[in-house]
Length: 313
Image: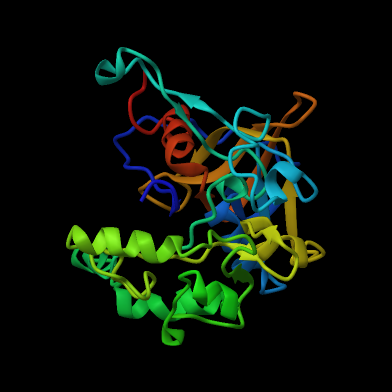
């Protein structure tokens, strides 16, 4: 998986060599991208006080940005400075128009601007990972889903508006707040939709996070009901732990490319990252153990190519 991987390079590929000066700051782990995956990794790695971790993030922190925090503000951040707003090539089947792909450019990544849907993949999708040899299955992953979750049970009012769950699929001691928003559509709207779905042979699904997604369901969201705020990766996995002395975050910093070394190995491996800070100054970090590329599904491949992996043109 390109978006979340320890980087090694086939010896036949072109790579940018190690050009890092001896004065380069050193960390055991350098994570490129302080988004949904990157912050979880940084949090877990830095739990060990002997492990040093750095995060390089292109955006800024958005703790008090109301376009982010408002649970009813979906779409308000689109087109602002915290949206990468990737533009596609002209699409033939939409009249040769381009399309905008939204991605969060902030500490917390796309979890700061998405629709907050909390819904796990189908168990069959997760089980397919095991078939390719990485030994991950739905049954082995479920305890970690639950470990990450701070599930807030729906209120009586929310239950009457269609919220439903099975407690065995949820955790209540994790860092990520999951619940139903304060504002839900009432007036029997859920029952009407459910009847419509049933008429189309689509059944009611009482727990969409059980590994079976199909059917009608009023699903929970990444939402902190006690504060009436969106829950994002930074609120769950970074801000409460920001004072860890072994965890550094470089904000407003654009990763340019990775550097490589083949010391003591026949296969080159990523050992550092070149980036520019907010002032435009080029800087570098050295990873003594791993560079972890977690820059999103679109930017991770770009950084790989800029680092000499893939098409050299």
